[in-house]
Image 1 (cartoon, rainbow, N blue to C red):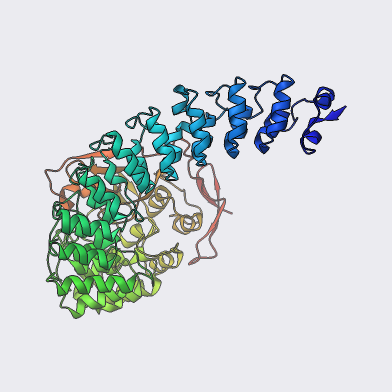
Image 2: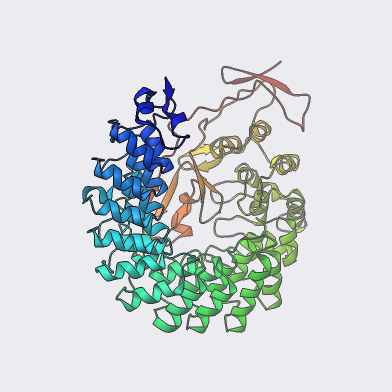
Amino acid sequence: MVDVQDITEQGQPDPSDLNNAVIDPNPDTGDTPLHVSASQGRIEIVSSLLENNADVNLRNKLGEVPLHSAARQGHLEVIQLLLARGADVNATSKNGSSALYLASQRNRVGVVRALLKHDPLPDLYYGSEGSSPLAAAICYDYAEVVALLLEAGVDVKRLIAGRWSPLAWAVNWNSEASIRVMLEYQPELGWKDAKGYSILHYINQATPVGIVERLIRRGADPELANANGASVIWAAVQANNQPIAQYLASVVKVNLNIPVGDETLLHLACRCSSLNMVQTLVDAGAKVDRVCPGSYGTPLQATCCRIIDSDHSDETVKIVDYLVQKGARVNCKGGNLHSTLHRACLSGAPEVIEYLLAAGAEVDCKDSIGRSPVHLVCYRGLEHYQLLHPRDDALVAPDSTHRTALHYAVMSGDLDLVRQVVESHKRHPDHKDSYQQLVDNDGWTPLHWAARCVSPMRQGKTDMRPVIQYLLDEGYDRTAKAKVRNQEWTALDIAIYQGADEMVKAILIPVEAGERLKVTQRLPGKRHDGDSCDICFLPLVGFVMKCEDCYDFRLCFKCQASRELLHPAHHRFWQMWREYDSRVEEWQPPKKVCHSSQPSLASTARDGYWLSD
């Protein structure tokens, strides 16, 4: 017996050879000799196999018939022969691909034309994972294939994968030639998806401005807004596509100063686009001092929200300088943080803080809850703090919740900064004898705040143990309790709820040898990664409340208790998310603990109690 695989490598076989050949499918792939010869374009062997009654529609392990094999490689003569001998033009593989899909995906124009002559109307929409021949051709901008499919009756309005209009799909892939073809078939130019995105919203950074120009000339509306209220120019700014933004702003003259959420287009450009984009918008009429409620306030404040690293700080300063040169006021007030210096102290680069101070930014101004820039700069660490040269009076001044700079400084994890702020409190005549009793309106000491253990304003994970141990050495009390909702918690309870490291929890255990350990809060709150409180800026865990009346304002389990003080009293709040993970486990204390300030006190745990060895 002879293997037909060998025969296919020898040229034109003799029919008698095929009669005596082994023609079983390949055990690994399921390919028959007809699959193999069709894939190789061996028309003579294909013809001989068919004359010897090879099954033209036998499937391999992928569910493909020989027609798939020939279409993938573009062998037109083989395709024509297979079709003439009864190949099913609508056969689909296990992943839904038809021969027409494979040919369209690879720009096999002749094969596509041949397949379409065999009336594959149901086949026109078959493709891999919800795609279609039209989607595949558009993706690679095979305009001739697109034209053939549309001529054959493919509906230019039928959604791709149940989500995209073909025209939006073409914009997404920057398929300019395909768009020109589709426009001749009356596509729906006013189409929107489930989120309100129009065809023009699908532009990206590489989209040629010619695509947008052509679509607008043919009737696409550049002012169509998505569900959030953002028109197409917002997509251009977000994608940092400056040519399209310039065309829309200067030629089409779309409205630039309508806020969406808590920002205008210029706010958006200042915080996430380029200097060129900012200049484009300002030149077209964007207002440099436009104040919006919420996180970003003014364009200058939004600029201070840019990514902080060596690659971005120089452009940030350039944008700040450009806005100031165009009339932006460094002391313009607005937004949650009140002033540009507040925002820069919280999230800006040192160079930005220096620029603002040199430009006359007010250091002593306070926001709506009594915070000065000095309070906020304490989140950042010693380098930023020293730029302000804060006076002792500013450091001990309380905000509306009675927190002083020390409550803020401990969350930086910067021990040198905490030492300096503690020394300033010791020097001040009003606090030199009472700095250890500093509490906010819920009875939280700096130790309670340090137990939350991380500030998102500092890059990288900070080991909080040195700061916590320093506070303990300064006399702050592990056993002191503070209000958390309807309970009284120690710093250990707070650390457990916040999900602090075990080593941090160990040094906060509020007992000595022979004493009972009483833990009020044994469950860690559910982590809501990437989200932070809009008042204390710490990561959100557990119980979270969101304002119904603001675009995006959330409060952590601590700050929500003071929401009527920290936020307009008439605004309504509701609880977001679950407080605990479905698989949450109670915290178990370690079997032994030794507080470093008292190394002789070693204890063991049994049944929830701490007993001396």
